[in-house]
Length: 136
Image (cartoon, rainbow, N blue to C red; front, side):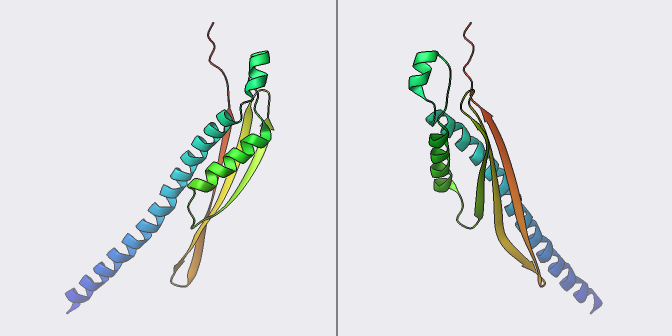
């Protein structure tokens, strides 16, 4: 009879470890996906915000800050998960030379294990500088 109890405890322990591993995997996978999403959106939004008229006149890159923010927010809202709450902050937006810093904080859903609630708050920061290749 003792061996049967040990078998039950091993099954319960196995199920508990599997659930914990699934929750941790979900948090880390979404963090990695969010980082690459922010990185790609920042790059695309910088290209969208390039002021072509200024470039034609001066042969120097310049971005429009308002157009960058608008494009970033639009692209980001189209691609994010609905189950999280995001807070987007823009730091150090410079038009010449084109440089942006974006910080995205996310609150994931709350996990409850034996009456103890935990939520994972993740912060992703991306800095981007847009430059032309040197063709000399």
